Structure formats: C-alpha cells, structure tokens
Image 1 (cartoon, rainbow, N blue to C red):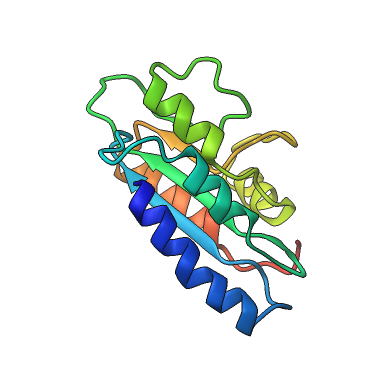
Image 2 (tube, rainbow, N blue to C red):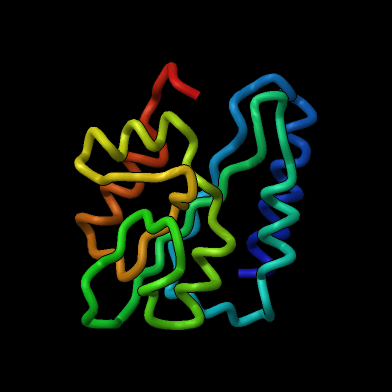
Amino acid sequence: MTQVFTRAKDILANWVRQYPSCYPPIVINITDGESTDGDPTNAARSLRELRTTDGEVLLLNAHVSSSSAAPIEFPDSDAGLPDAYAKLLFEMSSSLTPAMRAAALQDGIPTTDGTRGFVFNANMVSVIKFLNIGTRPSNLR
C-alpha cells in the first residue's frame, strides 16, 4: 500500500503540474486493509497534499474485510470501527467534498463536515454505492 500511494503521488504530481486549474484527482483504494510494506500513513498524506487550484487530491478507501460485521459507509469518526486497519484507512481518507456529500444524501446517507470517503466491510452493493458517490459528476464543489 505504501508503494502504491508513493507511485500514485509520482504520477499525479506530473498531472497536477500539467493541469493545475482542474478538479483535483480522486484516488480510489480498494483493499483488505493490511499494508504489507510498512505504515502507509506518510505516503497517503503526501499524496493528499498534492493540489490543484480547486483543492487537494482526494483519497477514498474501501476496506473489503472478511469480518461478518455490517458495512459501515461514510463515517465521520473512527468510533465503531472494529480494528486498527479500519481506523488507519479512515484516518487516511479525505473528507467528502460538498458535491460528494450531496450525492450521499441523494442516496439516503446522512453526512457531516467530518464525513470521510471510507467504507468498512464493503460488499458489492456498498462498493458500487461508494464508487458512485465518490465519482458522480456535479456542478457543486
């Protein structure tokens, strides 16, 4: 995961230089949550620090778990997340933009200013909903 975030940063740094006035890139990480190459926190932070004039790169994380727990979609805190992997992914995730919050609300998901682009124990339905909310075109920013 650390290597992937670092590679994404390298690719997106060039993109942001080429298109500095565009909507910031969105990185979608679908993972089992366990990084096999060290703590990805700093690599994720560096990735999210890239920015266009419209904002920072957005990092959205979908944690696909073998847990039998119900999916947790778009939380605004790590309270209730069952393990360290889920909490780490939540912390690395970007807050939803106003457009993403509006899309979530259209899908019946209440949000707050602290809601993150994160789902835990994502099944196919929650992954599709996650992708739809995270990438739905909108004029809202």
